Length: 337
Image 1: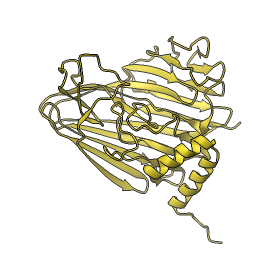
Image 2: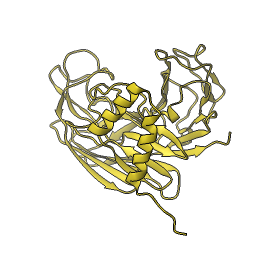
Image 3: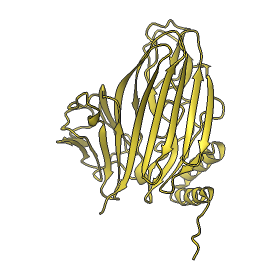
Image 4: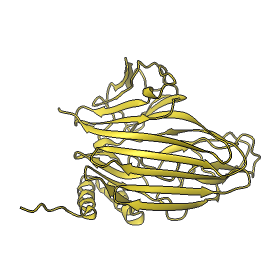
């Protein structure tokens, strides 16, 4: 008997219908509007099915100035579980966090030394204008002066994003490949930052992640585990969540207006082995392990009622003519209930 294999676009279409039918009336309107206006591009390795938004300064799904415009996943499904998706409401493309995971945020270059009306760079976004003397605000919007040039190359199991940015102070070529590993439930983000200007690029970056697993409310079904005992405090700890040895666990479901935040989780060292973080939901039997190949400089955690986000930070320094490479791996798995 011949096996019938549906074309990937058909699988995506069926998944979209199932996903949309599970939403409320208001959510259906927002998601259908988003899919029609900003159609995603699909990739698969026959284990993982993913759809990604493409960067575009005019027509892109995300035009905020906080996060890198490349690699934003509209949906990722493995083992009948969805791991990324629309955790937010609304379709304002200029709002800083109307973005799906995994989302990376580079610290701006020379913002503090730039005078009002001057220009500064955000890698993965472009050259922006500083409006006034106020300190940089990650949740703010800054006018885009130079969007650079985006090049997108797509294959069946990967998308390669290239952002070429040239300006009088800084210039760079930033590449990110979103790759699904053949025969394995792995999503790999491969990065290269080449300094094509005359000044050293020195910054830091973190991945906000924005996990949205099967639309499950953030609560006792979830846990976030680290390869070391952790320490930290912040809003929501004690009432909504607690630290237990090497895990963050939740005491009840978070309400719409509630958040849990720790700006500096302690306990890690400078070894890359500490960048092995597990996010699991035992109730539905789904998990993901995140690992990176750079030593951590900080570790933040944030959660609201719809998403939970371990945020690993590391430093980047690239001299003129040199390049810096790094990789982040997502290993998806199911858990026997």
